[in-house]
Image (cartoon, rainbow, N blue to C red; front, side, top):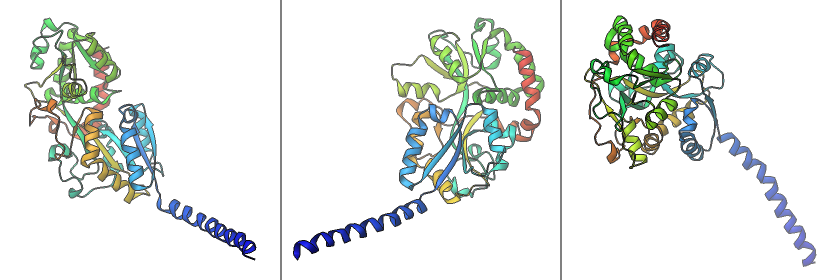
Length: 343
């Protein structure tokens, strides 16, 4: 009798366990959400996707669907199409945001959701776009070629810098458009065209992307380039032996560049999206942003590496001279002038 009842008893236990399993899977699927995020392709190529997305998914038992854009115009158009599934947008630079008034597509945050950013970095007073990384434009130069770099746009017009300046296309790259806005903020529209004419003899060529331009700067194909003032320190931190790329902040001032996150108005995952924003602004994520992007973290609790000790504590920026409305209304004309004067 004992041998007869034992198999029956075991079968009953196995049946009970099998019956419970679907309920557990159902509960897991109910708690796990899907977060749809738009971002530029650089979010993947920088390595940020691999370290940030996986970590967030594990912490919050969710799935992140990342939609990447190689073209900045397509990126903006994708946001303005207002897709039903969109929850968050990463990597919105302030130049692109102003050109397309992208802040209108995102919800307003309370000031305590970004308590650490100084007003200049915050940009939009309504906090519809939250900056998570920033830097300032400076002249990057190859010290193997140039011993004494110009310190102003006046000096840069000197004939000794003939065909040594590389520029980045403002239509295709955030650094290029920030530089164009920098010139407009400093010189106005008339002065902008005058300066482009004056600099033309010293322009080696215009590159479509920052990657092409930086490669040319490293090899010495061109000797100067405008980019984030934190770039040389970042390169030194990654490779202590590489110190030939230096930077010079111009006497006339600089221009702030930011990378922001926005919570889409149509998001169906508000709580999960806010959790991602909080994670993105946390110290661990901000440290990864520092090492992967070359920009500075907006969270001041992040201790900068020793390589960054030479960066100035404060920088005079000219962003407030150029309103978002002016950028929106005039950007097409500015691009036309660029293409006409720097073919």
